[in-house]
Image (cartoon, rainbow, N blue to C red; front, side, top):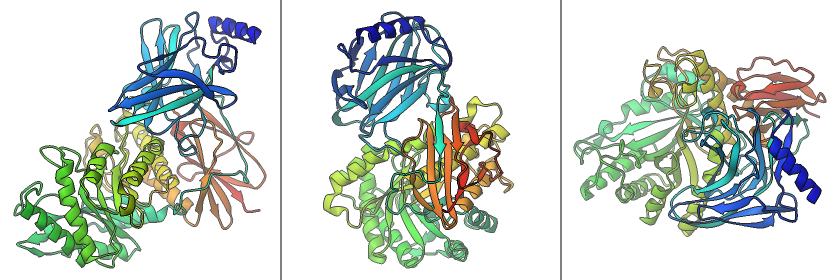
Length: 590
């Protein structure tokens, strides 16, 4: 053991000498397992069960927020190659966000966020993380780093941060910490008969859960385009001010739209929202105005009873934009409760969601629950400055909150609905590329992220998932709000629409069977079973590492790309970059 420690020390002092080098930092099994490691920022560091043998435990205790860190300091500053990567095994609960933090001798600090909970690995599961130290911000969010360390590394650490304010305590387990010469040492060997993790209940098919947001009531071409792209419903505002006049309600325009949708086997998610000039203006707060809103909600539910509709009460009530002059959970709960009760009086079978909260606003939801409001579903808008797969680490906390606080009120099961989410062809991801929202680069990235979003919500089993939105809302290529559409302003297909059609047509007739569990970090493989065989949908979420997919020839039928075009395999392998997006690998039935 002493000889191995001496060898490690020599390797670390010399740095990474070759692109395929692997330098061990700690496996926590030697006579001095925590040598070089210290706890910081209020954490404590001990030994515990590891991924293999012993591992390290970083304990945290947060009251209203906080951080805890485990920091390793090498005996000498460590030189690493530009393409080096940090590898470790991690186990953690969803209540904390994780990051690797690297300090170099030039005084620079770089932060690399990552998640322990993924589509394949639930809370408490060990998984391997590979972090490219030269990663660009396109893959990691907006408050971290830009490129590789500029000087020798003087310390690196594992940072745990409270995901939401509140009192939490627990520990993060980590093990087998290594430095790699490159993040590209990833191989996924794919066979037709590989085992998968069981899918969530009700996650069999994509189409029933997949909807799209629109802003206009009369648009036959939009209805046809959405139907052809595989969407099952529209989400749009059923505006209070447009349907009520002096206590009477008119639904002519909404009836026409819903009739057109139902003729194509589609439905609607109506957003009951915004104020009325006769009832308090922007936001109904007075008792009589809240009662008027409930009457409007009851009239809507009674009118559309028995038809293919769902309801959402308000849109993003946790934001200043939609609840001026500022969000107030108690005020919103006072509006929500009577509205839900009124809808259920008119239609006991109706499903009603809390108005989609911007991102995943757990503190706001906690206040709504504390105020006693009842509802059938929680609406979230999981926009993020990173890839969509990270939502897997946040939803467990919503489920835990609902289970812990609603108890007997969970009649029939309270669902989580993704009622709005999308990626623009010019936003956080595409600003680092040349061009704008009208460029080929930006639009290709939107197509990749859009399909990954659809696959993510499907893999998580969310019963309602809405893409935002169908058509671009403006002509400014450098305004993200103008570039969320699948169609451009002239109703032409953007690449995201072509990719979406490929996904939904591929998924048609197939059932989600589960995710491959043991995949390289950043890789995802979703198995779809059909009558003539199975399809693996494979993608790489890591922009800074290449994934090699090796395909077994036994039963292999075809490989197609994001847009359904044939892919040629070289020596039965595909080199899959993040920007390539999902690919489809088909195997015949046996």
